[in-house]
Image (tube, rainbow, N blue to C red):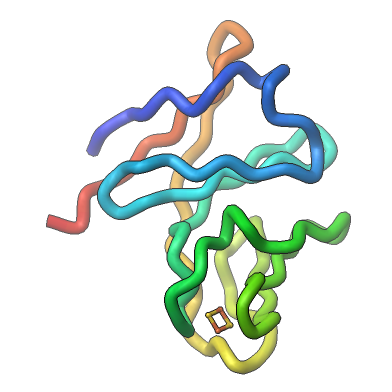
Length: 105
Ligand code: FES
């Protein structure tokens, strides 16, 4: 497991996401004071979830074919995706965001 520094919490406003070049790549999302980390690569195709559309109900819509995923659980909520995204723990320490990623290797 590796802990990655994402950015200062102040630099990730609500409704935005940031991609971390870990292995696998992870996207960290901020919605209304809550932070979530999901695998960045859509389970349906070659799209970065960091480029997706974040909704107030804590879901993200894939930018390529509009599948929706739950930010809390990674669950695939609509077609064409049916495989869930992996989730990762996020922590805030001294105003900085960190994500812990378990390598696929
Ligand atoms: S690549 Fe995400 S829904 Fe197709």
